[in-house]
Image 1: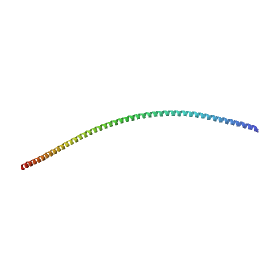
Image 2: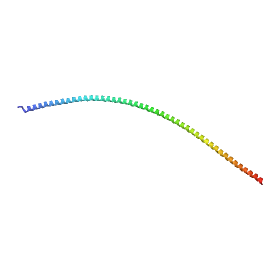
Image 3: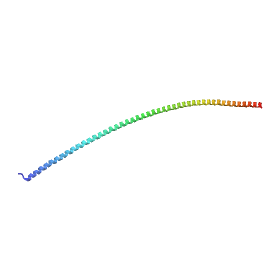
Image 4: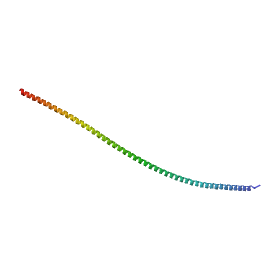
Length: 168
């Protein structure tokens, strides 16, 4: 039989071996974990670089797209400006044409009104002349009648005087 001391020594030695094995395993696992973490860090750094490059490329594409859109907008603005200028010119010409038509129409109406007024003036002059002729005729008739009456009265008075002087 083995002595209890020897058994204890064997157990301690076995425990130390086991502990040494456990410690070695622990450090091996720790080392493997650190290696895996380092690999992951490297992959993450690579992915970060890829993402940065991808973002940089997208930024460049967006800048180019924005530049293209700005050019399109500038072109559209220029086209709109030209269209507005063209419409403005057309409207100016149309307004000038209408203005000229109105002037001609007003001038024509003035001429018509002047001619009509001249015609009416002429009619009034003729009517006034006719009335003057009538008034002169009536005046002449009144004058002649008055002279006839006076002549008749004078003749009657003259006859009466002659008869009276003949009678008395």
